[in-house]
Image 1 (spheres, rainbow, N blue to C red):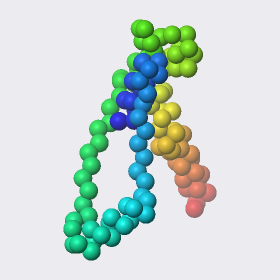
Image 2 (image 1 turned 45 degrees about the vertical axis):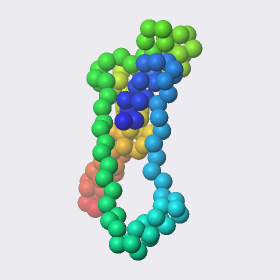
Image 3 (image 1 turned 90 degrees about the vertical axis):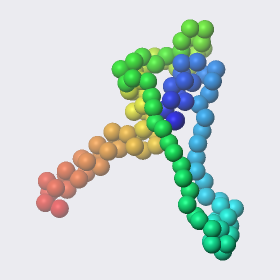
Image 4 (image 1 turned 30 degrees about the vertical axis):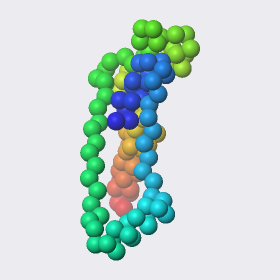
Length: 113
């Protein structure tokens, strides 16, 4: 999962970099779907995801031989929960985004909308 990979990157001071995953629909994807439909093949796709991370109250920082001055500067110590929240904020799923939506909804309700 994205979070575990990012955390492993921090623990290794960037020695092992987190992978990047993005789903993209291209013209080749659309062509493959059209071909499968024409051949009356199933369009089902099965995917399985596991989300995991270090305990939220644990300190996340480069460890052992990976704790070089450069790595410590690039990956400052922080609680794992804070790192997870920052990742969620980057993909617009964090508390700040949800809080803003909730605040807007509450304000509208207060105004009788």
